[in-house]
Image (cartoon, rainbow, N blue to C red; front, side, top):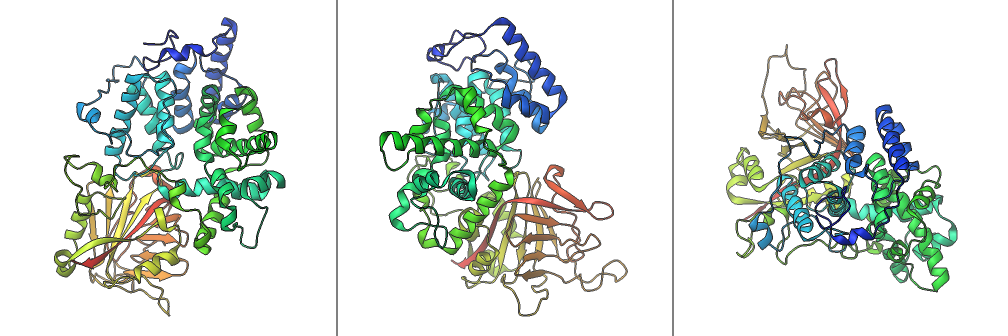
Length: 563
């Protein structure tokens, strides 16, 4: 261990010794008891303690703190450092040779190592490499890198990895797609417009206070880009501030990052006044933060009446503006800078057997499922024309096209072949379900079911893959009349595959914003609820709870083109 501070991990360089270690023994004991007692009281009490107790980076309780927070907040079981179940993670030789290993999910602007030594940085990349392979649905998750780097300051590789997976697998605690990242980048401006910053601060961050459509002209673009980069700036705070930020983040999620962004916005405005610099620079405000970590957190929570609902509304507003005024939107290239090698465009190409070989000419169209999983679904299609003479292409994805059902309909109308594969991934990433649809997705003049018996429902994850094809005509005593051929249904408010049975929910349904999905038994396909992961079920319905609703993380529509 390069550091002589015993409660840091072996991954830390001697530079960490510059951090203040002026701790009184009685203060250490008091803080440890306070945290332990709060944990016994539950998540709500522990959240308040994390807001109020200023634990410096060198406090001994930090060796156990973050696993404890994750355990209390999310029910995640993280073994202790001395547990016999913990085995070391080795850095593989092939990882060291690869220039891509560990960078698959990262952004070029967000790869801090803080006080990690060389071995610590290798461990960071090796763990992230393993996460990318184990989670092929992930293609861009920039927040994982700085979080894991901080975890490795206090924990061994297995514990740090368990902490990272605890964050990753619990809903939308971190952004997991390019579209989510961009929406979060732009949402801070909309939060400011709703009254959380003054008119002067708003003008400095956006170039104007308001306009007819809520978006500035091209001449005002630079201030908005600087403001949108708050998602990177928050991780440029001093180390002592960051560990306090993570204390609160693990208990309260993305809301803490947005609070930090608002505070940096205000400090950047003051910095602009003092130095006469334009445009406003949130990164400079972060690196030159004048407040102590304790006072910084106190000021962060002095922003009153700010809730998760404000974030949700801001993101919805961003989506609406991006769809309504695409010519005035900030280009993705200014906010998204994946750490990728030229010619390697998707997560699947990272997993090619040899990185020295030229990239494949086949572009895998899905971020929901792997190449082999897509091939399995295509082989299940009854239409030989599609299987033998067509190639799959991506028509629509919420990652880049937004959460608009109307856009999905428009993309479905843009190709020759009407057939498509609808893929839906839950927000946790644990569930991937969908349907092969024989007819084009469009709203008929009169509400009615359409499609034919080639349609089928499926579940990809949790595996193994399950296919639920059309059952055809059934005994009228066991099948509700009119449901046995209820294949596809489309309105301006949502889409369905498989008419509902006793639960009242379809085999698969999506709402107009593509935020919420539903699934239940359908007489058309004789399927169970496609969501089998209980943790993904937001609510359950039916006399026997045989149907559910769930939060949607990603929707894709795969179409077909002639070879």
